[in-house]
Image 1 (cartoon, rainbow, N blue to C red):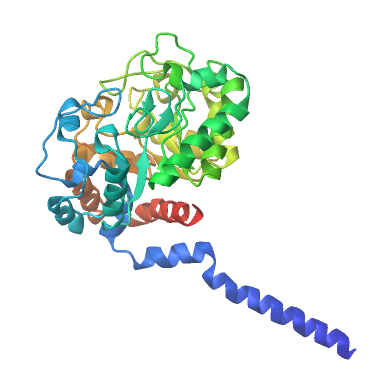
Image 2 (spheres, helix red, strand yellow):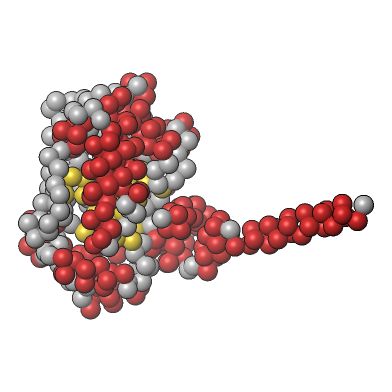
Length: 387
């Protein structure tokens, strides 16, 4: 009897200890961190920007080219944090910085630049578009001795997902070495339109059954190297003709047609556990009933991506400086509108300060409830802790 009581007491003590440990669970840590943050700090976490966006002495015109950088920006070659950037950042904290090819010269410069970025307010994560193939900011730089890849299409044609894993892991390994956190890759689009000028060989295949395991294998390769991947461009940019960098593009597919093609790869990524999905700025009029870009559509992001597909992690926009957005919306309208639609991270607004101020104003006026901001920031903080 005494032994039973002792065992029972031990069990009670163990349960009590477990209850106490819940106070330091990851979710409770996220909530505690969120509660300490000011509104500006929370909104800052929802913006990932070019380094140029923090230098308000720079004035440039977009939309950008296919490589994500307009000629006047590439000529600036901003490759270090300057005093103006530090000053702007004091008032405008930022959750992430994305580096483009023109921001990167050589290994020592990149290492110094990243250490400077790490010191900015908001503890920004370092991001890059390093897909392999034609979109490779480091891989296409002759000052870096890294393995390069012809294209994702060439990997898809091998039919072996292990090759996609090798690609993702190789890229992830050198990105980790240089100090990056997030790679906006792989492309999960299915390249079904031979007239497509923006996706093409960036996609693994025109067959979703081939592309899906390639996408998840690439993601696993990145993860095993310590890099967070991002599948793009939801709900699928592979069936378009036009380029959203320059203006309006659309897919005329119905949701049922997308479900049997584009959604195969995105579902695979979601089931694998991807932390980030990037939106496309394409219209899908036979899904939404309008020409609204998917980035601005609550039907696409909330009803379809979160509701129907069950995705619970971060939704990040494609660059908001692209023509498909800037030709239809002001910076303020775009930033507020995409968050209302369900976006968690606003990537690359054309004018960061204006976009940031607009979101703050929208919260203060009750246009966006602060509870909505909190939803996104929880996801972002959770990702940071799970990296």
